[in-house]
Image 1: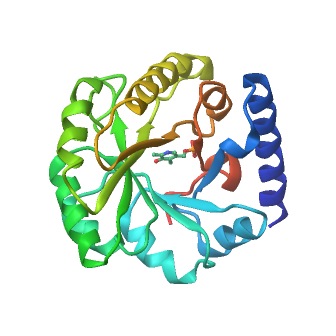
Image 2 (image 1 turned 90 degrees about the vertical axis):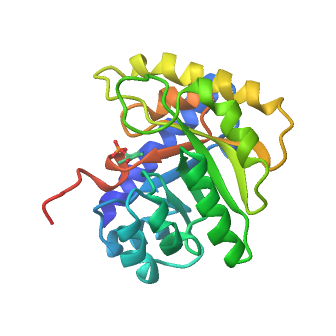
Length: 232
Ligand SMILES: *Cc1c(COP(=O)(O)O)cnc(C)c1O
């Protein structure tokens, strides 16, 4: 699976150049391999080539693959999470990127308490309000933070955004700027259990722009693993 090594070298070089352009240190930025539809041997090979973090968008894929993946890697859930499925992944994932309601926060809090852990989550923001089904508009972030800050077993660790698909990655830049501005504003708030550490944005088509605009978690699937085959 030499192609994984080649792809990762190229992406890492691109990240390094984007960091240099933005005057950022490469250590600030974590590349997350998005492994939806990818089978375990390829995921494990990518881990051997240096991938430290992997992300799935479906609960079922996490539970199916979990035991077959090398230990020590960090697991991220990046897709929409239904409250009735929280219990299946609460002991498996390190970061949930898709918090979008207080009801979901309450369920995560309850399940995390049962496992004696504090679950870190990102709030998914819908910057371009009409185009995406999930995430909350910026206007609702403060009230959600206020509510979540009262829970003991969930901690808001940052923000996540999925930019719409643009033909030109430059088009995503203005969304990323909006996200960075919100992220910086929220850094100054002093809610309990809220600490703005992670800004998750940028995918295969636009991760270099995302780095330039301040992302520190990049979610790259196709660029590492190749085109996804949904027919399997
Ligand atoms: C699939 C997916 C990605 C990765 O997309 P690529 O274009 O393959 O890099 C990133 N984020 C989310 C939320 C995804 O569902």
